[in-house]
Image 1 (spheres, rainbow, N blue to C red):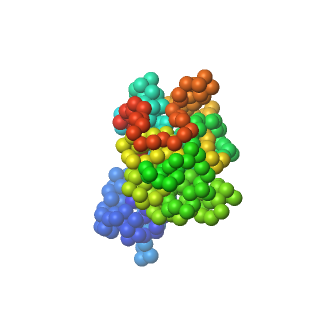
Image 2 (tube, rainbow, N blue to C red):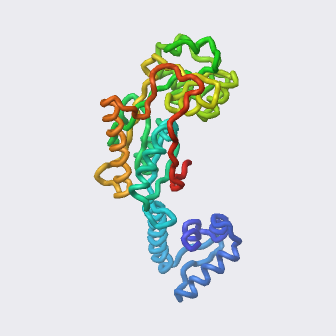
Length: 326
């Protein structure tokens, strides 16, 4: 309150900034003067101004408050258990498809680690890492974001979810252009319709007819099953719903339907040990999947044909309760 009074030049304005009454502010500053044995503020009709001793204390007090703020920021990097906290920002597709198993394996190897999973849209994630809002980021894009250290993490493919019995269901593959006569449920790749149309470019003769915006993949699939529209959903996510819902997944032949996910950090050599351990672990997971794909073993990616209802999904894995999605 002493700092606020000096900067405002008024006890009343300092009281307003601290949500206190003037008498409480005056009492606190008088107690400070009593403890130091020095007059710190000179009162006059226009407000208050520091004495020479008060001006010196003001500079020292500012340094103390900066130190407290820095200590608070430093502690924010640790969990309530006192162990390092790793902030991982990832797009929704990655969060649902790949991270549960990868983070579960990481926490088994590093049981004292604490991972905060922050769900964000891909265009925002490189900025979050660059600004220090997250130590590690995973996003999908046509190319790695400049100014950051990025490596390939995973790939996926989006397709069209249609209700069972839909006229398009018998198609083994199709372009999105072939489905434009029907109504859709958003979101689309790149989320906003305008940005998706930039991505699709000349592959579409007209914008899709959007009946409703539905960000949740599960809700989108359920609404498709009820005949409320068609939806664009990644293949692995669709697999987890076709067994329970009356829907089918059709692969899209459009080039934009195949997506690359990149993992990024601000400076690989300046990372804290815990964040570097997570980055290295996720990189190994990506390399192992790529190796399995080259050897022809399943690596979390399904067939390229339609996914009919009744096909059971693979076994699920628990995600540690240490993860706190935003």
